[in-house]
Length: 257
Image (cartoon, rainbow, N blue to C red; front, side):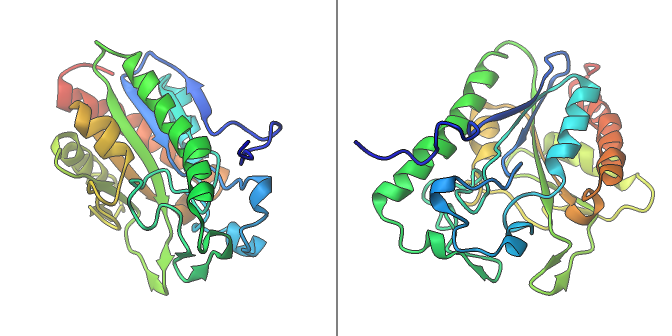
């Protein structure tokens, strides 16, 4: 019998932040947490490194919970660290289970055999994305906006990043353009268009698979982590998107949120 990766007393690989169905928004946080299964130890990584952005999207879960509650929207998240498996990478992407993140080696990911790799996919990646699929299918017939929520580090490999937030997109630019306009109208913000990252079928999973392949409109939002690293920062940015998401949806669909 194959040994399981997750022990019976460890959290499920899916977290539901809010069950709201009133609003037409489906929020997903692929990098919500930094938990590592006990069977993997600390992956050979120092605790100080596991607190950094390489392990999770700092502040985005707390921000998204506030948004979902304020709008009565649905929110789902992944509580296990992106260092265990990155839930926003296609299974063929070499960074799905990274052997190095930024400049930090991840010894526990080096030279994984097929069995170890398959366990991470089967017990963490697949249940999370299967749950997203089921929840979206349950909304069949309702107009829905898929919102992928992320945060990014303010300094990457020594280079400061000037953006306060970014809007990322692949083929479908419709509502992304509207959100870009709304964010740029906010006083004092520097807003990236496909910055600091961009979306593609080879680099990303959630938006291309759950939204674009379904013909579902989507937004992929990035917020700089130092701006949401405290409860006050989470509250400020949650208030902003609680205002802007319904307005973007109204301009895009003609329907009130």
